[in-house]
Length: 134
Image 1 (cartoon, rainbow, N blue to C red):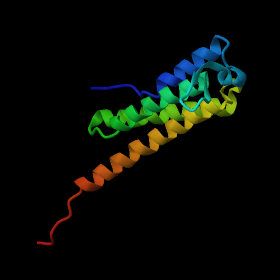
Image 2 (cartoon, helix red, strand yellow; image 1 turned 180 degrees about the horizontal axis):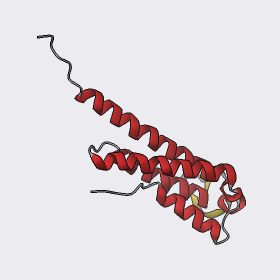
Image 3 (cartoon, rainbow, N blue to C red; image 1 turned 90 degrees about the horizontal axis):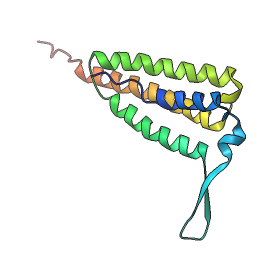
Image 4 (tube, one colour; image 1 turned 90 degrees about the vertical axis):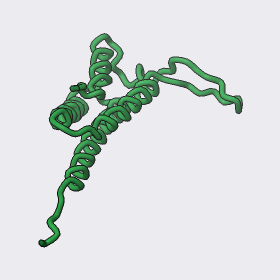
């Protein structure tokens, strides 16, 4: 069963939010709400914090997907590459993508890409059987 790259979802959400006027670094850093912790400290949670946290959950799903084998994994690797390239180009060329939240999303896409290829290569190395010389 084919599942599209999960990290494409935060990429699309980020771009839609920027399209509708929520694209500056100040917008992402502004506190959405606060939580008072047991110590009495106040934890300020911004949109960037939530964005990164939810993207990390999706990265975990992507890494789990990378352990699958078969034709779908090859397509998944190619699409993960596309997601990373789009993130990289957008980070370098689009002004609203020059935020820490987007940079971290781009790093997650790179980690997904590297993890997918690493898992595939390790699995392929295990499948190679060497002759016993007989």
